[in-house]
Length: 252
Ligand code: FPP
Image (cartoon, rainbow, N blue to C red; front, side, top):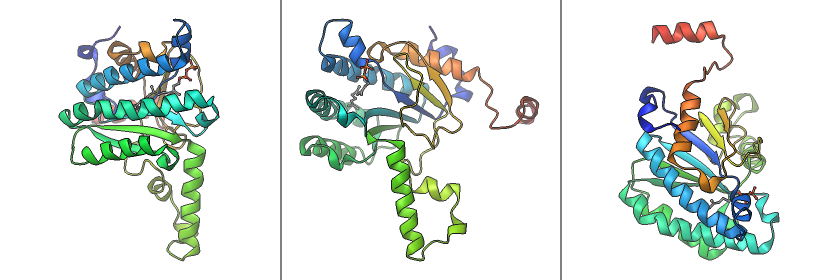
C-alpha cells in the first residue's frame, strides 16, 4: 500500500476522474440493501477527497449518476437522489472550511426539486472558494454531452456566428460541461469492471486508466495513493516515441 510520502509531488496529476463502482456488490456481500452500499460510498468519497486534497490534486471528478442510471429500479433511483442531496448537504460546511469548490457536470434539471435545491445551494455557498474543485457528474453521459455540444455549435453556425472551418478541438472543449477544466491525467475505476461506461469520452483521450478490484466503499487514501503511484510509474508519450519523451525530460 502506497503512502503520501512515496508520491512524487512534481508528478502529481492535476485532475483525477473516478468511476465509483461496486457499491451494490459491497452491500450484497454483507447482506445489506444496495442503498447501504451507496451510503458507505459517500463515506469513502469523503475519505478520498481528503486524501486527494492532502496530495494537492486540484480536480476530482466523480461519476455519481449516469444518464443510463435512470433505468435502475425506482426505489434505488430515489435512494440515490436522497443520498446525493444528503451527502452534498452533509459535506457543505467541511467543503467551505477546506475552501473547496463544487461544480456539477450533467443536466441537473431532471433531479427532483429537493435534491436540485440542495445542490444549487451548495454550489452557491462554495462559489467564493478558491481551493480544489470537486466535480460531481450527475445525470451525465458523454454521448449526451457531445450531442448537446454539437447542437450548440450547429446553432452558432446557423446564426452565422461561426464558420464550419473555424470549428477546432478548442471549440468543442468550450461547449462541453467540463469547459475550462484540465483533462484528467488519471481515470480510476473501482469494482473490477474494465470499461468506461460513457464517462468523459472526449476528455480521457490521453488519460492513464487504472482499474482495481476494490469495491468503492473500501477504497480509501491508501488505494488512491496506490493508483497515483502506478500513474507516476508510467511514461506518457502522447503519440511520441519513448526516446523523444526522454529527450524532452532531459531538457526540462
Ligand atoms: C456504482 O455502484 C455507484 C453509483 C451508481 C452511485 C455512486 C454514488 C455515490 C457514491 C454517492 C455520491 C454522493 C455525493 C454526495 C456526490 P453500483 O451500484 O453500480 O455497484 P454494483 O456494480 O456493485 O452493483
